[in-house]
Amino acid sequence: MNTYIRNYSKNELIEDTGRISWTSPSNIALIKYWGKYGHQLPCNTSISFTLNESKTTMDFSWSSKDTPSDEIVLDFYFENKKNQLFEDKIRAFLEKNRELFPMLKFLNLEIESTNSFPHSAGIASSASSMSALALGLCSIENQAFDLDICEADLIQKATYVARLASGSASRSVFPEVASWGENTLTSIKSSDELAAPVEGVHEVFKTYRDSIVIVDGGEKAVSSRAGHALMEAHPYREERFKRANELVETLYNILKSGDTKSFCDLVETEALELHGLMMNSNPSFILMKPNTLAVIEKIREFRKESGLDLCFTLDAGPNVHILYPQSIEEEVQKFLSSEIKPLAQNGLIIHDRVGQGPERFL
Ligand code: PMV
Image (cartoon, rainbow, N blue to C red):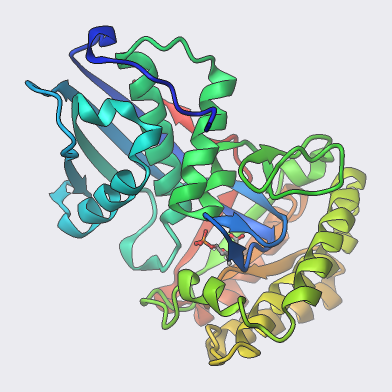
């Protein structure tokens, strides 16, 4: 029996119509989730910084159906326009997981979604959008049916639901630093089903900036879904999952100690390892572009010359996330303007930072 399923009937509906709104951020993984099993469960533990500026705002409204039905009634708008493709994807997700939300029998839903980052930035929006969706659905259920679910339980259900929609989205519901996946550390309480906040992180890491260099904002040649699937028969599969879990332990010690130099070494190695796994997949694929490598070289040169602890990480794409503490922001900004901006597509660099997680507005 899934503990997240609450049973309620139409008689318990206390708000026939209503509106709520959530803003939820994207996150950037430091140790990457790459490879899954079962029903959206990760093959290794991942750890991420929750971002602040790159976020999705979702406005939800509901009204009660005249007659309860199994049909999922959903209207979805993206950036003020009806978006059939996204609507169909969300409907398919709800159909697959309808047992989690008995309210779907009784309510018509309308969702309006907007992203803070530009369309063509190539930023993965699934973490911010699917965490916002999960939070919205859990809050509607709680409010319309007066379930009296406390904040902590609501967030737990939201991370569970977000994970089913997009694995990395499970981490976005927590502030600052979050993990997802079973592990042996007592201070990291995540499981394969639920992400959790990482406690005890040194203050310096809470000031971290993430300047996202948009090298190419186009559609990726290989989706994350396809990439995860290629881990099933990957030649380094077992070694990778074992190593990633060890790296989680090393990273956690670094995060506690505030050692920004070791952070640079570990985070860069892990980013290149993710792309190495892609190159060694069958079929092999490469998501980096020539300017991804050019940016990486510039960062390494600048770090050597200046002695400043800035480093890079990569998502499953060509864009480069440059991570550094607030204390060196001024020097890094100068370096970005002179050396990095010319390598970015249309000069686009999105300045983000570690943030406090989702916010509910209505
Ligand atoms: O959540 P998905 O299925 O889009 O996969 C995310 C994969 C990475 O971004 C590469 C790593 C991660 O942990 O976020």
